[in-house]
Image (tube, rainbow, N blue to C red):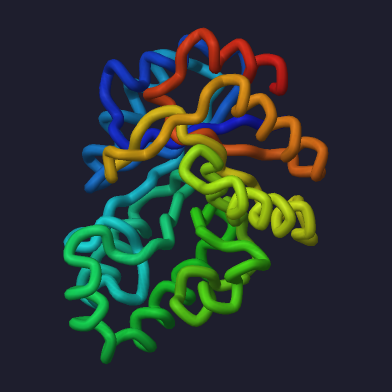
Length: 243
């Protein structure tokens, strides 16, 4: 199984956790610019040689990328991304900051923005991974919102079991197990450290192992762990068994 990582808050400390890993990996590093990303890419490669480093861009004003982002911010971001050859993570979620205000503000630009995002993904499908809250449960609704485009690129389904109720986890597991063309998907697992919300429940090591066993049994070959900064010897011991 290929085990990769997100790092939403890159630093010398969080990237040093790469030393725990005994296997090759890929890390998606969040940054507000290519210049900032390249700084952290160099640090990551200093800790681990057998690593692929992908750029996870944070878009101005809305943080995550969606048709409810500002049109000028989308255009500016995608123009910038043409200047970098690294793999990319496009995190498709509703705006983090002033969510409903931005949704209302950009409602009349929704169709145009959706087309801008879809065109970029289609033109860069060889190097793009999308992070989506998407499965057979909500796929049509997510497509309507422009958070799922169904194109032929790698899609990582965010199943953070520590954040969901037992009943919702059952529904997500059922949906994941019934996904077709599994080679086009990875499953995002966690969380083992809090993200930008700051209040996420953490996944204990034994439950991480259960989630990995489930994903492997379903036939998926890739997982992405959120996030590297929470890695410790207990988590690493489990991950090294699955790599």
